[in-house]
Length: 211
Image 1 (cartoon, helix red, strand yellow):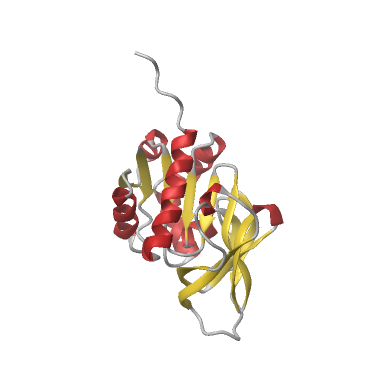
Image 2 (cartoon, one colour):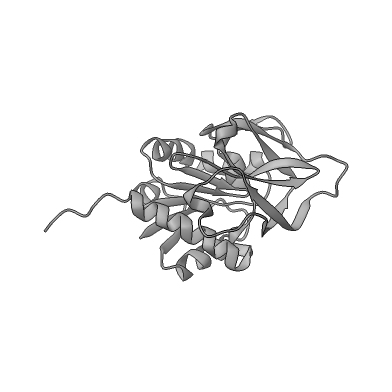
């Protein structure tokens, strides 16, 4: 199974790659649109600022490529900043447009809590989804972020986490899935979730042509 990891130039991309390889995927870092198109599934990771990440994607011609892949029903997984980029816009630094694959915006977490939100926190499912298979309500995952999504459609929210305010920690619509936490840093629970996503990818792969 070929997985393309978008090299955003931000965050610990090698940890994502190593986790997917451990689970049996052929996972490769790339900024080439043709390699994304040839993949069975695409991972959009990232740590850092929303505007910088969008500028990076634009420079490499990946914004339209990612939108086209989503329209073609290629499985797409956004991690941390990558999840936020799936949405329409962010207020980080300045108002910046995202990929617009999911309706909603990214806003700063409340000043009443220590920022950034770094460390382990619980994830509570709101509805069933294959990405959560085999995991229990209240499972702990590792977070690093200051901004969080405000989803426009409640049906897109798979699970929530509370830090200053409740925010979506897993979202999904069709072939597009996003997680605010870092599964690659979340021990066995994170590997379980990544394995679930790989099964989603496998189930969406077209059948091999007969010899």
